[in-house]
Image 1 (cartoon, rainbow, N blue to C red):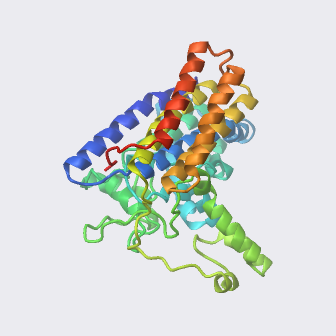
Image 2: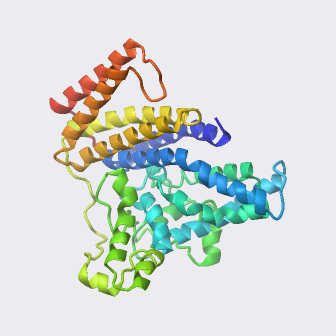
Image 3: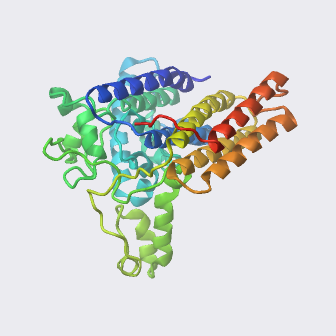
Length: 413
């Protein structure tokens, strides 16, 4: 296990502990900080992001390493404290510009939008990450390779910058005085996630909010104008694949419908929301309404509890997948990734209240049990012992009973 994976493994239990503490604090204050469907969607997108990272990390780190070894002007020492401090500051500066571009250039927004789709703002939102950021995000960090920041330093400072941003995704920590003027903080980042006119496209800093103050993108949270979260084109779905594809698909449709070739290109490079005049006229979209109803489709409590229980199982399987990643074959990882992704999509359909979702879930359970019984294997595990086969069948059977023989269960609220 490399340094990055080791740090993530150590941090993950802390993440869930802090999520539990935030939930308890919010309940004590009489606030609703979490909804089961939204939280599972956010965490599921985090799982998908990690799954994608297994297949793309070689590309993103590999490109950086190639530039470092072939085009670096210097080769800075990796054992110098000043190099580490300078690299972290430089990374945070470049992150500011990537983040800002992610809100100002539609093709970059198509990746970043995943992080903003939740209409709740809590620590689970921090884990809601895109699966397509690897496509273009790496370009912004190549200056570090060119000036000679070693690969191992780049990987660790990137992780530090990312981990710092976890704690600022909370509504339970109020304003922090002088700290808010220097660093990215919960108050500053609440404003960043808001769709109110006052806050839109502001406060991009990862660790330092000073970048926003320097480049004119800072706004202070105003208690008279409470942040409203989500996006101006609400996702209205808990499907993780659609969450990742939504803006790409909408943009591709606009590009297809545009009459002028210039507009077919501009729709990708202009700010989010820009549409060619002819497309907007022929395919109008409803106006943004900030007081819209939060997407929270009603489902039976037993189904909600069922989906939460199944998601807990999938989290355990996702951990197993990540542990296998360094040693398993590409075919094994691809099959496992497909299974996990399909399972998350089915759970999303349950939370969306789709009529066919319980039957799709039944097929998933039957298929899982049939696979284990037929081959007595699991991804990366050769020759499952019979007791484990029996356990898998028991879990599938009891899950089916829970799914299709509903009983009254307590509400998630």
